[in-house]
Length: 200
Image (tube, rainbow, N blue to C red; front, side):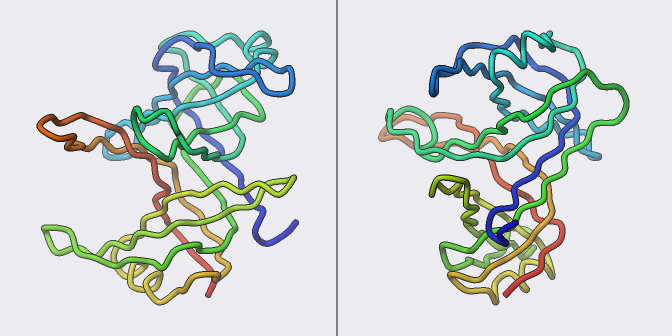
């Protein structure tokens, strides 16, 4: 497999709601549902899973039930003007009922398409923001925001645009406030929290 084309995700979590219609592509209906994946800290990552209608017919999704999903992290640009500009979802390749501990594992290979930015949190912890491009078939790419912490953040800060990297991590959600003129709006950002990284 091409070094810049690896995109694997394996999640176990709880359906946070009913599936709803998303879109049609090449004659196939796709539906989406929220998957709640609990971290060790107890924090919930609420992730949007996109699956074909045939998959949901074979494995109906019911709120509160546990499911295992494998697939790929996908991105697309939201041009509606409502919500985040970069939308991140989990495109399901398989879906089945599950039991036991929640899980959230990603393995990605791609190239950095923006210079990493190292900064400090208000509490003084180092964090590095990156944007990873992962190639798909047919000339398309997914652009995935990634963050690394501590000593790994310093390592990532030494990388440059175009560097190939291989990483493992998890897909997480984060609430934030967006100021819109005189108003504020709560939005959700999705990003890859990097656990291990090779590259440069």
